Amino acid sequence: MQRTAGIAALVALTTFSAVPAQAAHRPPREITATVETPSLYDDEAGGDADADDPAIWVNHPDKARSLIIGTAKNGGLRVYNLAGHEVQAIATPDGGRFNNVDILTGFKLGTKKVDVAVVTDRGLDKLRIYKIEPTGLTDITAANVPLLFAKDEAEVEEQATGYGLALYDRYAVVSRRHSTRLGIFRLEEKNGKVTYRTTDTLDLPRTFRLPDGTSWTPCGEPGEDPQVEGMVVDQEAGVLYAAQEDVALWRIDLKGGTFSSLPRIVERVKEFGVPASYDPETEECTLDTANDPGFGGRITADVEGATIYPTGRRSGYLIVSSQGDSRFFVYDRKTNRPITTFSVTDGARVDGVQHSDGAAATATPLPGYPKGLLVLHDGENTPNNDRVSTNFKYVDWRTLPLR
Image 1 (cartoon, helix red, strand yellow):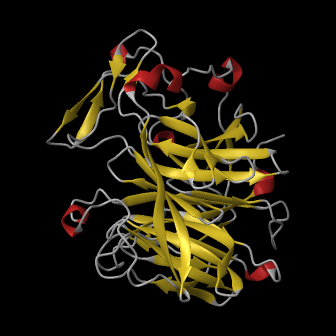
Image 2 (tube, helix red, strand yellow):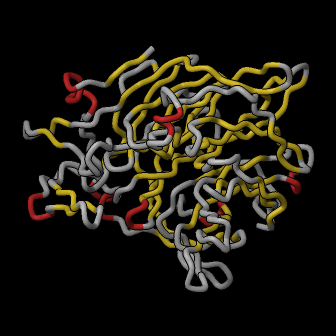
Image 3 (spheres, helix red, strand yellow):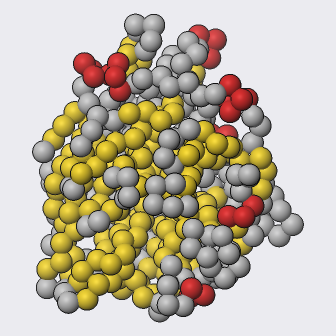
């Protein structure tokens, strides 16, 4: 089933809920990370490895052997222990580029229930599925899995492929690169391997009607629509949070394998409604801030990685990356009201977090993290030896400014 959040619905979709004045002007609290993973280098010597999105696998029988799984794009997957040491590296298939990762627990594989890590391979427009064990990950992807969005291999070459990812029940919500499209895919076991099939699609808006009656389209390269990457599903509430990078954080209800409500905005990016022009030489957009109509929120584009820290069945926190200014916004999980803002700055042993893409949180007590763990992508790891360097930072949940 394909659905579009069309222009006629845009007024309802872009209801402008006000951010409390005190939240809008409150400076971010500064915290530090406790552990970092080894540097990944996005060059030939480093295997074109570029950290992007983390997931946390809790090994409940032996929590000390829990794992952090992170994508490294052309560098495949990296698996780390709680000390931040790499314990496994998994290469991509030929032509592959691993973008986002999420974890599903209790997936039925034959007669057993297993935990699996699912990855978007944006190079091949496919999902890859790995069984997780304390000793590492094993690929259980069926040989003939279908393309996610592309009609054929020629369209795959254009790279409008599977991008962001969030899992729930037996389903994967996947976004399409350079597109507003979201798809839901049901994971299915066949002969000990895992494949998938499409159950629903939804197109988010690409043009927005503003309160002053004008229309606004986010600036971008011609032919490319405002895409979604960061996503998380609140399984207990049946809600998807989807970060449309140049637009806003959306909230969409889910029911089974379908999108069951119109998208609603939680918060817009600061640049929402601001006129801009695209420069083909620099491949950048120039904002006309002098004519900012004032309809934006607090998040500096891109709005990115989203994760949930539960404190009860419906209570807890939603955390979102404000990539443009290297801050993180925290919302009440149930009401989506703003709670606080923080940044991760340089500490005595670990540098801070800049321009973060992905985030993952767990409330399960772990060794060294008695109130849980937050793992964040760092887009500008230092020291970098004059190379493009990225990695993942571990943050003790007790340090977050929530009191």
